[in-house]
Structure formats: C-alpha cells, structure tokens
Length: 405
Ligand SMILES: *Cc1c(COP(=O)(O)O)cnc(C)c1O
Picture 1 (cartoon, protein in one colour):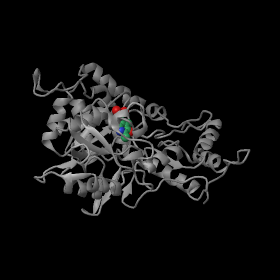
Picture 2 (cartoon, protein in one colour):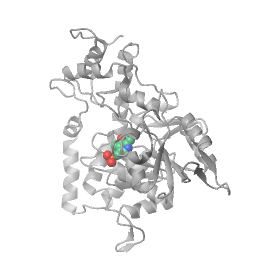
Picture 3 (tube, protein in one colour):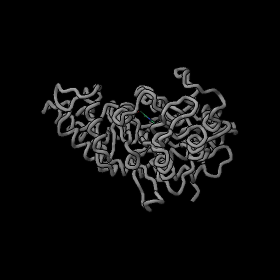
Picture 4 (tube, helix red, strand yellow):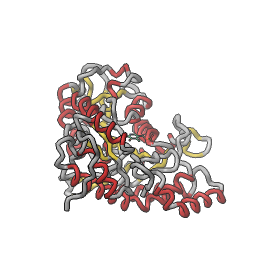
C-alpha cells in the first residue's frame, strides 16, 4: 500500500519492493551467465507466457508496438493493404499498421463497451467494400485497396465481441490480429465453443505489451506475439532478429526487436503473480461499482456477460469530466485520460482522410472518460476516499463516505 499523501494513479513501486529479492536474484543470474540476448531465460518466459495465454507459440519482442507490427509483417500485410481498427485506442495500434506499410481504416466503437462496434464493422465491410471478381479478396471500393485484416483492441483489458468479429473475418477472408496490449489474462466466453477463451488465443495472432504500467509489466520495454500459427511464429522470430533464421543468413528484412534476457527474467517472476493481481483488480473494480454504480454524476464501466476483463484501467464517464478531474487532482488523487484525442483527429496523421464528426461515439467518449486509480494494491479505504470525492463533486467541502454493507 502506498502510504504517502494522496492516491497515485498507478503504483509501480509496491510490487517491485515486495518482489525485490526474487527480482534481484534473477537479474544476478543473468549477470553471472552473460546471456543478455536470447538464451534459456527468454525461451522459458516465452513458453510460460504461451501457456498462460492458451496459445501454442509466444515470441518475445522489444515492445507491444513491435509485436503488432511484426505480426502484420509476418502475415505479409503491407503496401496496398487495409487493416480495419478503431480510432479509440493508443496510437501504437495505428503506428504498427502504418509502419508495416499498410493503411489503417477506422470503424467506430460501441457506446457501452467502448470497443470495436460489430455493427460498424459489418457496415463497413458490407457497404464500403466489395468482393473481387474471383471472390477471393475484399476490396475497399473507394480506394481499390485490399482489406486484409481486422485489428480489434481489447481496450482497458475488456475483450471485444470476438465471436462476431471472427465470423465476419471468415466471411470476408480476413485475418484477425488482437491488440491485446492491455489484456493479459482477460477472457471471452464464446457461444460457439461454449467456453472461456484467453486474450491472445483467438485471432490469427495477438500482440502484448509489457510496458511497466501494464498488468504484466517489465522494468523497461518489452512485448510479445502469441499465435497458434507455426509459420507465422517462425517469421516473427526472424523479423525480430534481423530477418535471420540462423546467424548471418538473412532471409527477410528484419529489425533489432528482441526481448532481452533481463526483462524476460523479471517477467517470469511477475507472471507467477499475474492471476492474483488480476483477481485483485477485479475485486477493486467490483468495489468501485458498489461505491459509484448508482451515482448520477458518473457512469461506471459496463461488463457484458461474455467478458471477464483484467481491469487494466477503470474508466468512468461523466459529462463533467474536466471538473471531476480537477477536483480529484486538487485532492491529490491521480487520474488519466485514455485517450483524450481520437486517432482520426491527431495532427500526426493528416493523411488518413478523416474529419471531426466521422466517429461520433469515439469523439463523445474522448470528452467524457476518466481513468481512476486502479492497481492490485489499492485498498478499500483509498477507493472510498476516491468515491467520496466523485460523489461530492458539487459540494464545497469534501465529505468521506463508507462502503454500503
Ligand atoms: C501499450 C499499448 C500498445 C503499445 O505497447 P508498447 O509496449 O508501449 O509499445 C499498443 N496498443 C495498446 C492498446 C496499448 O495499450
């Protein structure tokens, strides 16, 4: 627990202090072997994370952004290809698509889940695209580019409606790449298989980020691709390592994009706690729901029955978001905005061809969302303090509330 004044938005210190002895021992092991790049520790982590995700293969890379980009490149997606995604995501989703050489096209998100709207996706495919004469490809009518893939983003750690997305992908001959960078351990209940599926095990491939603030975070930069596709796995392995299959045999153009052994050693230890940490986050989410669920000033996250989110972020909505954020800030309560400017309105992407008004749900959410402090170590008393501040937005003095029993 952080005992300082105020409540931080994230707590990157407590878990590392708690695990300090194990983390230092693991790093020391690397120092004594000199195996800094590749080797058994990286391979060990890859095996363990693949198992955690119920995927056959995991390939460690240097970031979540690289994971997204390498997965697309490994599938041969590039120039003249379209990847359909959402404007309500972190910029890396689009960076990866553009840097693979492809064109991102957006569909809006669902107003309840904030994730890719199946309706909007279906609309896009049925009304803006056509099948090629041979019926083998889906062509975007206005540009003539080929739609190759869908990249749903499991935003805030809540999974997209994967049954419907996979069905549409199959109908239109598209690959699905999950942006699971916020979704370590999140689960989706498929009505088709009648069981729960882990993020990273459903699409053709998935990308994870181990940026320090993610549910499984490195002490630096790291990421991974998961897939059940052996050929794709082998290609990602080459692309992350200068395109080589063995030393100095460069079969494709690659990158320096490997996961290093020190990060892998740290991730291996932290992976052992991920299920417990996610459970704690879900408990904290339930407590927020109890405290704020009936409040008039805010709307709490909606979790469909088929979703078991990992609550990477806990995001509420309010028409008085700015006032709320200011009030919490004045009380030393950390908050965040994920994300304040939709990607189709970013200055860095003037060529995507969109304008204000194109994605009304995303645009509205950008002005209403507020991420509250959320981490496994947050305690009830802190959440009560936060809830009290939210509920008393309009009262001049701060009253503390307690949990209803
Ligand atoms: C964090 C994140 C990424 C990028 O991961 P990095 O490891 O920071 O490169 C991509 N997509 C989403 C949705 C993310 O949250």
